[in-house]
Image 1: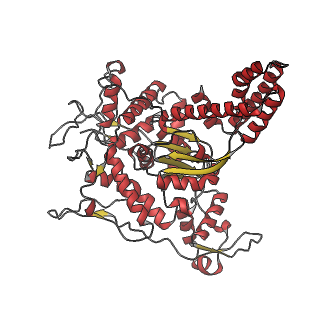
Image 2: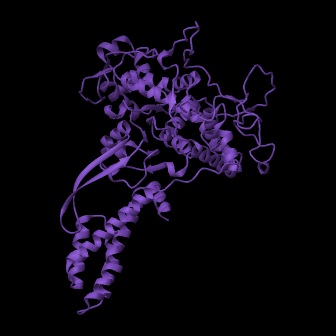
Length: 568
């Protein structure tokens, strides 16, 4: 029941707060009722038993310490008892309640499927899939999220990194209704429920006192505006992986004591926002994910909605099987260190300054990808997973766009506004200036353009006269966006003159794998097509080895730019 109510609280926000307040008021009403029915006269023993068994448990429901202390005085006066033994009894109950919460927090999470079971076999087919990340993206499409292949992969890697010990922190930016939360709702549905903590907002010190287990978990905050007071604690959790807070509190017996609150990570903090940029201190700790706001993506989304309405969408039973497979697969992932044998061949530039953080974050993404493929990667004598060069290639493909935009401090929407500015005459751009109404920016509302002009002014691309006349401010172009070359690559080994990593092409199609139809189990039918089966030799991935095979293929359908899925 507690979990059900927690889900209601996460989903309904303020409405749930009203329910909690109502329950608190009922606790107070119940307190008055119990006091009115308590033994009267000189029966101190009977009154004390009533207080301990029926009244004090009600005081535990009052979270405010001042309110609880005042109620305790009322109880002592009403029952004509000394307050000292009541304080001691209440203190013991509070300690017992705290211990119970800690036990619940430390309780083992839902277990992985048993070895040899059908669920274990299905989960292992996922974990031994050579195209594991592509499979995750395809399964997210089958759960209803179309398009945005790279965003789906980066979201999945960020979430699973919470379990790897190398958390990758994301932020997700887009206009309202663009689908920020739907991306994360879909991605996180692949993860076991015990790994996801969902909140609509956070107060400044909420993370210090939270009863949620955030170790190896994803904290999903649906909107940045609901957690602005908690920016500092979020920032510390992202950087240090734990929180520690000391406060002076009043004890039930009227004294004072210092209490240390600890919240253990590592935790991946997922935030979505309509803002172009986060707080500067927070922004250097995340990989930004930008939602596709194009008309083409809107068309794919509308088509998916109409397809589902016509009854041709994925069946609920199939979607539940997909989620169960991934839940079990992620539970089977075990802690392990990752070594990158070729790390000293990785070329990383010495500027901008934020590369000091970005370099480590890029390496962590390589580690997470290798760790995710732990059932496919070789290990050294110490049991460490050995990352392959393809793990580096995949990491660079996933984060290069985020890094480029972060180094430019430009979002896709800001780039579109700058492009519209370039189309103005030179006199307008640099001398006389231009008004907001003179810009024609496709797919962006006038209000959004107004927000972006302010953002471009803050980041030094535009200058604003600060004089808001009848037609608004006047802007001039100070500097244009420069082409950014990441300069990150992998040098070939000493005995190889060829580059170890291809230069990323922003326009290239993602190399989606095609999968051979293999039934998950007899009851699912031999004709069911499953993304990512790895051949027929148990859990060993089939080696290419120059084999000439005829591959069964299927289209993934609209929404993923026509990629196909195959298995070799």
